[in-house]
Length: 557
RNA sequence: GCGCCCGUAGCUCAGCGGACUAGAGCAUCUGGCUUCGAACCAGAGGGUCGGGGGUUCAAGUCCCUCCGGGCGUACCA
Image (cartoon, rainbow, N blue to C red; front, top):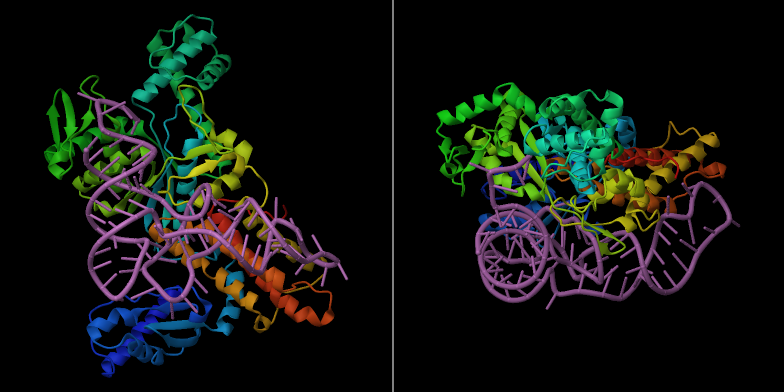
């Protein structure tokens, strides 16, 4: 249970008792919100409930605040309850309770920060899902970082999470990919075969084709085109996906499942779901194509699901079957898709579709991350596959490193139109907030090492010695983590993590400046032990935060 | 044109409807290392929160409108 929940419950009890004894009049249902005051003199937490009640109670808010605060029952957490103008009830956490949290955090260790909000519900996070036609470029990095951290956060919040990559292994793009591959393969074998139009440019397919020729031999050369492609395609797809997976791994991204679009077609699911919609008269035929009758559901236009030309399904067509599979076959309670802003036009239609399938649209959330504007030393970089101006994620990681990359992408909310300055990102100095956070971790690790070298055993300590302002501030900050995790999970906003990490690192540094931990004076041994436990607890909290962000926690830098 | 998103300090961005001074990092200026890591700390300057209306006891936060920018608006994915 979070601190805020406990306090809200205390307020609720106090309000009820005041009302049942007639001191306060009845009032309608009002949500009890526990807030975090900005000024220290207003305590650690506060509620403005009296202000919200004033009107319906026809009483001055300050008076209501006074009554409620006087009726708050004793609790370990609470050190002080006060009422304040114009109508707040302020809580200060008890020093003893704060001190006891050092033990709690250390005992929880790598589980510290976990919450039970998710209650084991099954949630799927699908992200990146770029067509497997070549290496991932920097434009895909943001979604990868957001998606993977979001999955971490949801897991920490108690959800049963599956991380999924949807592999578009059929459709037009792949046909162009294979056609180009075939041409490159034949060229590598010395045959004069022209590139198709359109074709995938770039060196990737040339290399892949010549690798396939070298490693699989030239059997396909003598076959006719479609047979040759049938021979080469599975291996080309496999290798491209392996490369994508490898690079995502470098970025700290792991998947639980790779789902193939093609299976939706071969398994017959696509046809079954289409029949289902046809029965509901949501599929109409027009101009030789089949359409999803989105207009019947209030959308502007119908959407093609089967093309008239080749009778193949459109992207949206297979998406119908895919989302049906997510909800009805794998039975996810909740599905989260992380998409780039270039797909945002599909959000409303997918919600309409899910609704038509009989699923509560609230169970589907689509997170749109805005396109990143890449810069170098202030100069805007325009990427284009056609002009071959492209930076791959792998190149980005060579320049910037995974930790810095993740921190930068993570610290902006998905909706912000962010800029990414490559030059700034690779500056390995205090200019980059990434290192501020990691430095704090390394520093605490170093203190613990020093203590160990000097043979100081801090497994038992008197935590009541922790009364310095910076010690208590540090405890206050580090016990915020479970709340940060809950909030990030609830709002699906992992960008709260790096901001919390900065605050925690700052609290650590201020504590370090103010409080000598390892001392050579014998009389300081007891306070040293208590502080070492605190350092250990802080390291646990910061380590977990870095872990949730998919970043490393370096013991040395 | 229509739809979605964004506009907060010189720059890059947070800001969970509330309490005299709207925050952080970077940049600028001043000060601080003979004991645990100065990739640090202390302090200063810098903002009509794009403009204008409205709702409210209270608006950067909600509503309307205008301005500026990004993206989308395919029988492509």
